[in-house]
Image 1 (tube, rainbow, N blue to C red):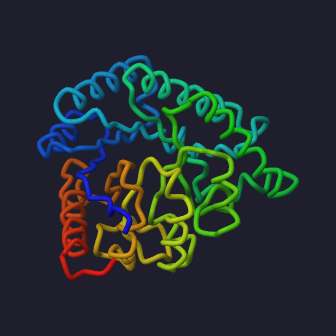
Image 2 (cartoon, one colour):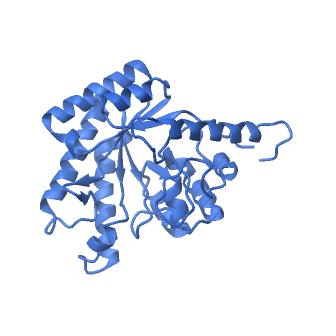
Length: 283
């Protein structure tokens, strides 16, 4: 019987003092910084480095730096054509390099999205074909994988490019040898709410996953629910997780300065773990 990953308290926040104070009182074992455009000025990078040191000193050295989602209102899509979006592409390159520099300096991790979903289709339409758009993204990921080495990981979406949940695509991604971040809800949405497809994908990619975003969903839209509030079968998901990987609860908060839904998700998953480890339980 494979070892079941014991849930850990993984929390997410920006570098704001108020959010940091709230998260650090829980002493998380994993911490993920959600960065924004404002973090990539000279002062912003200093502030982020200070926050990173604070978390390392007071809580954990297992830290992930999440690449910013937007730049001047546009999603930071790797598929964005340089000719049409020169400033966006410049920001994506520079911000990724900035995060990787911090990751090498402080021995932490950078998380980069292979794609998002909201503007991906609009940008794919600027290429002669989906195949060419896809080839551009994978060439870009190859470059970043080489640049970031063991300090970079790539996260899935539910767009037509860089998603998990279909066997052919999973095996294609696995063959490229990337270090992966697996957002459970994104895969579930891509699989149209199929727990069977979700667990199959988790098993296929298990060895290459280094970080999980644990989020519930009903599988119809990007709803980012607290664990136990959606349709994901966590008692089936938990045994499929790589026990060596880190994880956080990337759930929607009622108040960004209060992590209670993240913490409640951890306690919910601990109950599932305890139940799976009861003497008479069958995994």
